[in-house]
Length: 456
Ligand code: PMP
Image (cartoon, rainbow, N blue to C red; front, side, top):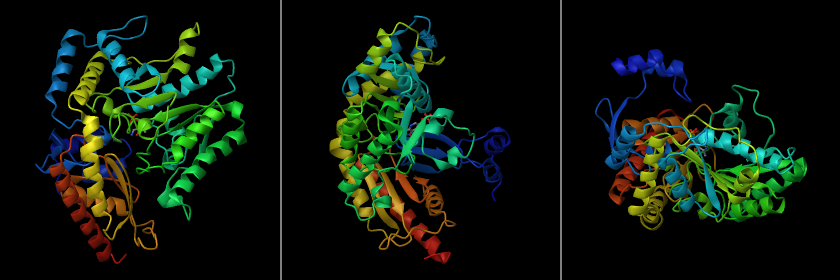
């Protein structure tokens, strides 16, 4: 094992990492990233790496955008902080609320600010339940979510999400949450066509509503495309049926767009890609292209007007709700997206090219199936794709592949046995060519590793 650098040593001594086995990491030392430009990051050893994940699905405009740095600098000098409690506001928060209201679909005309996707989700949970309490139905407090959903890491987010590994830790969880199956056709669709399976999964919502009683349910929440769950792209029939069922039982529909929001699927929001009109949308990540922590909940007229007409404080908020510097950077992010037609370019130019490159990769012996939409994809790695046989549990095929990627200058994330791509929205065709050349090479190396291990 190579000796650790000063940063790695310090890090191992004092830094506890998210979603990490700290004991193991400290022995080998964390990767140290030192700088970034465009779609590339560099590590301490000087290796240039193409970032197929846009950081953590967030750096949509790419690294090194000096306009964003300049706006932050300017705002810090003028008004680095002031809160939005106590009947106070400031220019950046007001302007950003207006800008978000303009780019969100339907009647999502009011914005509540938070700092992270998890906080946005907590806000939605409290607001959905509070809405029904205002309406005189406090018993309408059950939230329905899905297996293998990710809604953040706070207690509420972890409880709402469908990740078994998270539920095992830090329990008891928040009560009043029910879950239904995920619309993962390749993995769970059996003999059904994709369309049939989409409808069957959506109807699981109706069954759950009837089981717990329609008048006890506050909201249904889902990511338009499940991200951290491995990029599960639902069948086209799924979301319209979910919308129909929510309307039928007067249940609030919530889209968690922390990943899908801000262009990832080829529209400003995933809800537009799937033709749904949610009552609330959570957003974070792409809102500031990851340059500063900021998140928001866009609230539709039905809920917002109830809150506004109800003569009582909403007792919820964060010191940094609408932080002026983060808000100024987010506002500039939206401006850049509009000026450079980022969303249109994703939809018309770069996503089609990305999809074509993915289709070419599908013939690789390890690639069983690729879920893809816009500029996001999840590849299922299989031991035998013809018979849909997965690798045995003791072979961490995702980790093997991820390590080869990193060694070869590519960031591709592993979620179990699925490899994920979610590059910056500004990536060029030439950069995608490079990314896919590396991806194929790394899949070849992964195949060779498992062959050498005698697994295949
Ligand atoms: N919801 C979704 C759909 C997410 O993907 C994430 C983060 N990956 C979150 C919520 C939580 O966001 P954060 O990590 O900013 O708290």
